[in-house]
Image 1 (cartoon, rainbow, N blue to C red):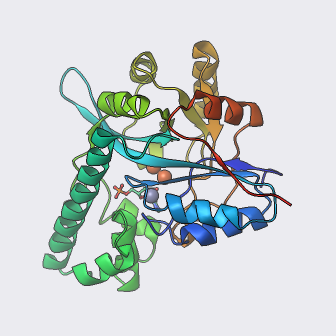
Image 2: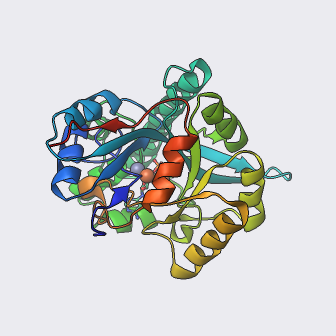
Length: 294
Ligand code: AMP
Ligand code: ZN
Ligand code: FE
Ligand code: FE
């Protein structure tokens, strides 16, 4: 781990991570991180608990609240590419953005249910009751289905599930009704937040945006790029760093920590302090939450 890491992309039990917000904050502070962003999928449900946990720390620590929005880029020919957009320090009461989060979560539930129905109809041991229990009322996603498949012996591992039964392109995969990314950029900005594109060149996950398409998003208000991410190859990090330099964007580095549902550890990637400072200064929808300190 980078000493005094600043990790700006993490998940909890409010979406598809395995640590509660309190456990996540405690772990981060114990591990020596100095700042963390909470970015559960399509929800702000963990914000209050995380803020409370930061209030109880006796070390210097800064929390930035955010959300990872499930988005889609639609090109002029109608081709759709899924992508994830991190929104930091936006006003969670912004009515339209709040309604979009609710719509995205509902879409997640419907699609997860459809995937589970298809899987079980084909004899793959997974049932809705167990999957929704694993989701625990939070934003439900494929990691919960993968978990149930591994538990029942229908998949040997998460990797096998993600590259087989529940991969994009599998007959059991059902897409979500994601948010059009240009609309997401406008809404996050309107709510005073800072939009940063997540793992945009994570090629092992499926089709990714072209550099021209990323530049289109920059022109449309993208503030930053998650350059350092465990799923980014060194060459792609260099491409993104060049893009950041040319457009004077915020470059972040983050683990995308999901607790036990992924092998990446907290703080395995980190954001430079000056970039973290710029991110905070760019926000008008909320302030970071600082621990009382020693
Ligand atoms: P969904 O948004 O429901 O389609 O599921 C995507 C989620 O699965 C994201 O949070 C990813 O971080 C996670 N994910 C993608 N690929 C893998 C993998 N190979 N192993 C574990 N988690 C993965
Ligand atoms: Zn996730
Ligand atoms: Fe993501
Ligand atoms: Fe994530």
